[in-house]
Image 1 (cartoon, one colour):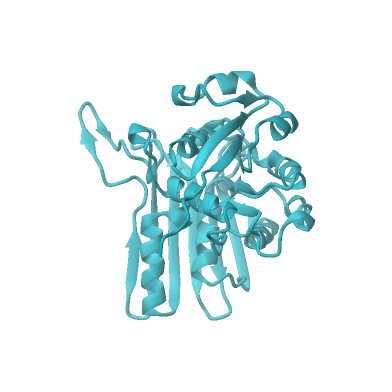
Image 2 (cartoon, helix red, strand yellow):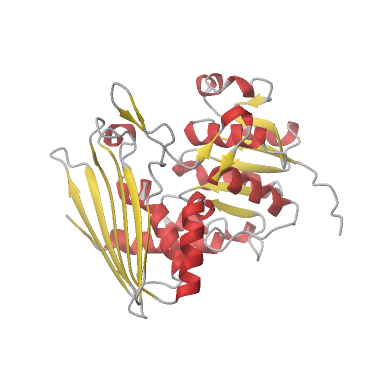
Length: 328
């Protein structure tokens, strides 16, 4: 059977900061996409984009870009607080969106766009990038083959400077959101019956450790910790570990840092995440996420479980219950 050629999706990216820039470079290098618009209110941020994006049209105003760019779909990689207003503007224009995590900073804001979402969420996909990571895919397959889970243990440690780099964003929301959507995927999207959230704060009253425990009706337990505790002398982005314990089996992954080490004046890990942009040929989990979004736009794929709108809202509900149970 010969398939019709894939028509590249004309993509716009709203938000040209760190992750917006990564999405832009990725989309520019994918055969499934044609990057036609970059939007950011800050002219200086647009001016700092990588040189390979120099020919892509740029705007400071989203409404203008929607009218003039010809983009068929958008990536929303703005600040968390602006995710919903930006997504709403795009959805009201009748265009699909890929929204970076987290969906929003509060449940009510996330629910405000529900009338604009299609029943199958085909016009809304969350940027839950680790769902596309090779380690998580293998681990998830092992779980499906081996049976019920008894205990999940996840750690996500980042460096101390994250406190200054992301003021007001505790590890719970900045980093642990990844763990929560992975838990959602591994437990079939069932809500926990028990939530516990304990936090540690510095002498400046800044949260640097978030410790969460969850329990499900079938007895499955999860322990999740995210922190800003690792010294920069160790490694800029700390380390991640995910362990899943079943009945007579255990699986473990170490996705961060990637298993490439270099020693010179000090030890270095040149590949932080499974995101590769070598020779303008993107590969890894971000490339797979963006490629999948393009296929969703063309009607050739469905939004993955744990990345649909209703999944993101359900996970935001978990966060709300955790914050209500917080202990210092």
